[in-house]
Image (tube, rainbow, N blue to C red):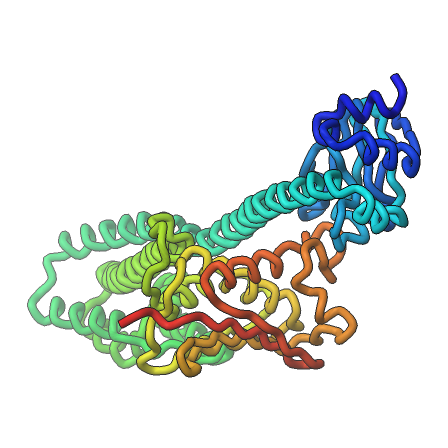
Length: 461
């Protein structure tokens, strides 16, 4: 079958006038690919337009270090550079998956083709729109999956500490309760007098008294434990009690008072009972705080993902969304010893938009800022009214964005991160989502200060 017959049978271009098919044959070059042959590579410009007669070609795009198939072309499709496309390098590598035959129209001939082949051009412009729509939906899906992976990793890291604290606290609570029960049995069998019971109550109150955290230095703590150990040794008691007693607020004078009222085995049991009581209260408080931390994270994740988002734009309080996003990224900030501050203007009006999409915007921008800053750096999030809109400013003290690439950072697949660490989709997704929320975004950068600004419309009163 000659080229004219193959073009006439082509499902995309077969209906165009014969004169236009003749033009394609006159300017095209037949090619054949074997399995694994690279038709176009991301590292070099696309050679031209490819009219596929048979076989199968797939485009593989780097997604965070993994090569994933983004789109596929078969016999009857047209790939490569299409009319009016501004593409230079493709977003990935186009590789033959089956033996493939095609007709290649060189890049230099495309302008002439637009002039000479009206029907071909009209058909391919529609094909390019469909291809852009396919890429857009795929990019959004993949970016959301990547964000979900980051979210899951951050959440797992954040939950690990409080869950471990709960597990550790519960285990230690079991030990301290058993110790308190043993001491209580000894004291119950001692038939203490009223005066002795009052002395026990006094030392217990001294142990559980509220202690100001962070007052004692490590040296002071060691000196306190040593002093209590000396006191215990002087009274021929187990010096192993020094550490648990040192953790309490008990004073040496309180110990002297109980030693005056109670002696022998009862004194040892009394001190163990008092120390165990303090430990039980302290551990209970730790478990409670850890459980509250888990509950707070769950609330933050729910607010961040906002799975019950409305199908239409609605009034949104940006304060909550920004706070939830920072909570989700807290572990990453801690990993870089970074500070993330939120400054929301008083009486900030609500904006109109989709809360889940806007939280995705804040997540991408703050996550990028944390990547850009040095260890110990800072990210400031400022939110205030600007006329008829609200502006959110995300400022970091990183190295800045070089002027040569500043205009390209919103382009799809453009990234300054090493291979495997960035897809080049984050800021492209951000811009699309901001526009979908009727907003605008811009960036201003210099060494030591980069600021992304997002404007959003006010919600109707």
